[in-house]
Length: 315
Image (cartoon, rainbow, N blue to C red; front, side, top):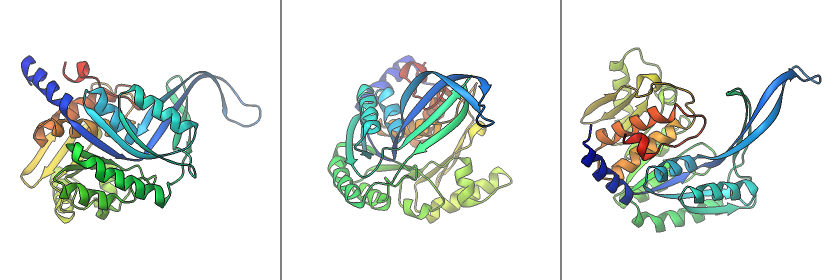
């Protein structure tokens, strides 16, 4: 653990750290209500909505986690020219995120609507569509322009089409000497070749590498994938088992810091946001991983997509 003075020095470094987040943004909408009866129209519960809430999700949640910890977050993404896109922009401005949105009038901003009663999710409804090639090409120009002004790049892939040029972005950023972290999606990891680090969760890694029976076999699979994709490192988040960092220099494991797990949605965003921010602040990867593990332990005790604040992380 750092001394009080050490924590102050780290927070000063964090305040100067600049991280660009690129990827799929979305608006998370929550409708909270009560269920007291079953519908006479169909055997489904009737939710009487008492209040609503909106939060930035996906890559936008990564950016707001960086800003919440005191870092400088730059968010590059595509949204629709619609009410949801404007709501998302207003939320991020309030969170002090530097926004670079491209508006595509031909798509709807991705929205995830969740209906909850007594802290239990009853239903989720998704609205989404992929951005056009022209808008994505314009975003690539902005990516090049912003790159000299940041220390670390985070590519947050939610499979919504916003990272169609992810391989090109990795190549451009690495040629510029930038650290590139990727939160991957799906089982086609070849497009992430050459990134500094990938952060799959346990189930995502299993989808790509197959099952393992012990930590030794997991390490073999992780090292094989890391080497084949020319990655500096691979960080596998393992839920209640903590997280494990695989590098050429060896393996580092951190047990979970979570005392109470209330909601894991958005935890991966907090992990990669904190990791990227700490690397931008000058920490080595194992130490940055330790802080991201601590941040994950805080955020899973909160409902929905949430952030970690300095007084929680540096307490």
